[in-house]
Length: 413
Image 1 (cartoon, rainbow, N blue to C red):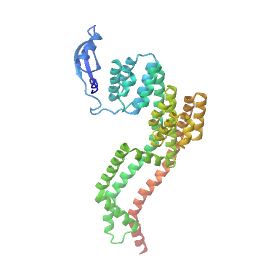
Image 2: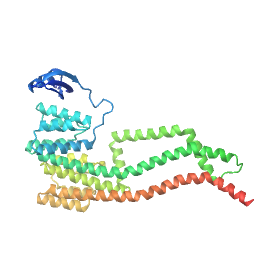
Image 3: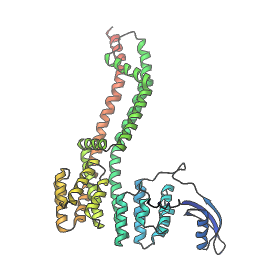
Image 4: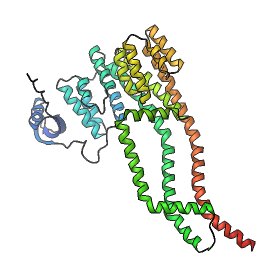
């Protein structure tokens, strides 16, 4: 006998409306519902006489709207935690946070969740409908808070976790932004020199009637190649970028190879190691404090480390813990975690204060990441200046060598 078909829930839309209240005053607002009739019925229950109801276009597909970032989710988590800790009912808190959000796309998302919660759906289930913005970790923590009756405390822990995670990501992005921006500018400047400046010098040199220095000839040949095949170079760069992105999204082995290579790079590898450990510790501490079983917690933690090498290691640790092995022993077998981290976890397991020990580890390594990023920025600035000076200076010298050679010949005569 075939199973009964699943009931498809009607899609809700956002409607803007205008109406009058019991005193006859004109008011306006927005409501999420499945159709106009439900909007009209809802308004009448509130004592509002609807005069005009219009369906709004979805901000996810309209032009000029910002996409939802992880920073938006972090801010939403803190706002919701603050509102509920102050005793504001959940539906009202969603209404206040949603209406006041600056990002229209995020406003649409929050009001959609509010509509589901208002209809009787559990908050965790409402969040699970939006996996692009609320991962398993977020949903599992909310579900644990709902079951234990401490949702306000769990939302506060989630908000703190999100803020700490975004802080680390922001520091790493800040450290990488400057060198990447300078390198891109250097590539653009070099391309302009190769395509437009060097041909002018070449025309000038042709009138000298003398042999060009070997260095200058090499640069001129490179310029000819760039002028003739600039489109192929550009297409090749775009194609390589697309291929890398495509393979990255679809091949875990490729991501593992890249992450393993990045961890071995001097300075950068150290920062990535510390960032992964801090994320592991902060995430596991948050889930442990929420009362989530260790095996289930490790399953969510594996996706929060930000590195495939650490993610695979955490999944193997989960298998070990599921068979009865202690967490600290399993960590020691992975050869990824420093001895200090393993000892702190061992103390936490023995004393029953694993979340406190992991929070201390996370705070320590977050500070280490901060210091390492500052040190890397200080090291990169002079290194980038040397590279730029060598590249641009080399091109300039190559163009002026024939002029110097001609000047020397004239002075010798």
